[in-house]
Image (cartoon, rainbow, N blue to C red; front, side, top):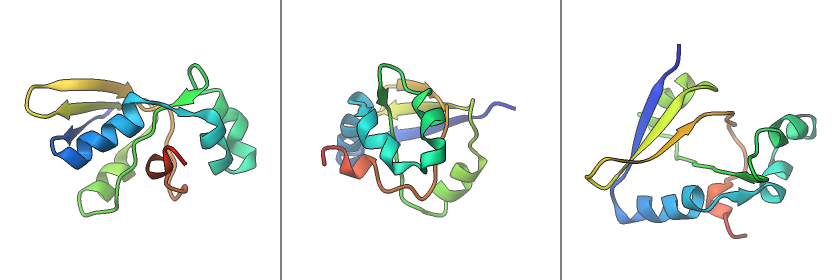
Length: 107
């Protein structure tokens, strides 16, 4: 069964995070080293134009159950401010306990 997840980017911090992680993809040379070596080739095949779109979140009472129910093939919609959906994405893969890619976007 395919799920649909919705997240908001309604405050200034969330919009800044959205600009740094979704509007500007992360180059694969910053993403691939974060994965175990035996998974890198399969992860690399998921990239489009050699870039990755990454959204991370902090653990919390709502975030953990959502994360645990997410699977490849699910859809993610982003509500931007009050006016509707600005981004839609299909989950190709996800990882847990990886070094924080989104927060180190420009490192």
